[in-house]
Amino acid sequence: MAFNTLNYSLFLVAILMVTWSLARFQMLRLTILLLASYFFYMCSKPIYILLIMGSTCVDYFCGKYIYQSQSKGIRKFLLATSLFSNLGLLATFKYYDFFALSIQQLLHNVGWLPVESTIPLLQVMLPVGISFYTFQTMAYTIDIYRGNQVPIESPIKFALFVSFFPQLVAGPIVHARELVPQLEKAPQVTSKQVSDGVFLMMKGLIKKVAIADWLALNLVDRVYDNPDVFSSGEVMIALYAYSMQIYCDFSGYTDLAIGSGKMFGYELPENFNRPYMGTSVAKFWRRWHMTLSRWVREYIYFPLGGTHKGETRAYLNIMIALVVMGLWHGANWTFFWYGVIHGMVVGVNRYHNQKRKRLGLPNEFHGFALIWRIFLAFQFVTIARILFRAPSMENAWTITQSLFTWDWSFGHIHWKIWAVLFVSYAIHWSPKHFVSDARDRFSDLPAVVQGIILAVIGGWMVHLSNVQPVPFIYFQF
Image (cartoon, rainbow, N blue to C red; front, side, top):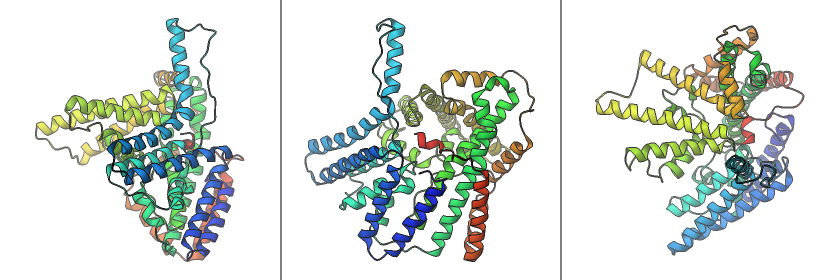
C-alpha cells in the first residue's frame, strides 16, 4: 500500500478517525495502531509479517534480559543473538544471491568450478522495509547493552516502535528514545499538528508525483534505458534530473511519513536538510538520509575508533562506513563502488581540512568560495549517482561513455523539463524559511480554504499520475 495511492489515503483517514475517537483509551489505541501497522505491512506480501514479528520478539526479549543480567558473558551472548538474527535476515533475503553469484563467477573464472555447475540461489522477493526495521531494532539492543536505553516493558509499545506504519517501509530510522516516550502518554493532537501534517503530505505528493515521477518518465528512464541515442548534453541533463528525482522521491516519502505521524500526534525525526547545499561530500551525508548517516556513525564509525586511533585508521574507518552505506542500499557491485568513491572523496575532504587546520586556515567559507564548494560537492554527488541509478556496472560504464561523445545538442530536452528542473532546484536552494513560511501560512488559513486547496492538489495529482502508481525508489532497499 504505497503512500501515493488512494488506498493509503482512505486507510490513513480510517485509522485516524478510530484512534482520535479512542484518545482516552491509551492501550486500546496503541493496539489498534499496531494491528493497523501489521495490516499495512501485509499488503505487500502477507507471509513476511512473520519476519518482522520474529525480529520484534527476539529483540524485545534480548533487550529485556541484557538489561536484567549481571553477567557480562550472558549480556554479550544476548547482544550477539540480536545482531545475528537481524543480520541473518538481511544476509538471507537481501545479500545471499548477490554473494552467491559473485563467488560463482569468481570460481568459474579461476577454473575451480565447472562452467555447467552453479551455486543454488534463493531468488526470493526482498521483504519491504527490512533494511530499516532491522537497523532500528539492532540500535535498540545495542543501546541497552551500552547503558544508553532502558528496555520497553510493554510488548505492544515495543512492537509499535518497530512497526509504526508511517515510517515502517522507508524510514526515518527512529531511535527508541525518540518515539517511545511519545507512546507512553496519550498524544494531544492539535489542529496545528493536523494542518502541518496535511501540508507535509501535500508537499510530499507534489515532490513524488509532479517532479520525481514526471522526470523519471520524461527523461531519466529513457536515457538509462537507451543511452546510445542521446547526446552528451542530454545525458548530463538526465544526471541532474536524476539528482532531483531521487531527492524528491525519497524526501517526498519522508514528508508523507512525518506528516502522517503528526496527525497521530507523533513527531518523527527529520531525514533531509537541503542536501545539495552541503559544502563538501561529507557535509552532504550529514544532510541526506540523516537517520541512516547517524546510525552508521553511532554503531559502525565510532565503535571502530572514528578519528581517535591515528590518521591511517581514520581513513580506513571512513571507507568502511561509506561502503556499508553503499551496500545498505542494495546487493550490487554498483552500490559497492558507489560507497568506495564516496569514501575516497570524504577521505580527501578530511585530508584537505586537516591540512588547512595545520596551516591555521579557517574551514568556514563565505561568498564565492562557499558557492564554489557547494557547486563542486553537488557535481560529484550528481555524477557519482550514475552508479546508484544504473542497474549494472555495464550500464554505468555506457552512461559514463555517453558523457564523452562531445555532442552537446539538447534536441530531446523539452522546454517543460527545463522548467521543472529550474523551479525545483530554485526552491531547493532558496532560503530555508521559504518552505516553513508557506507551511505557517497554510496553517493559518480557515479549514474550508485548506480543504479546497487539498482538493485542487489532489485532483492535480490524479491528473498527473499514471494508471499504475510508481513505487518509491527506496522501497527496493
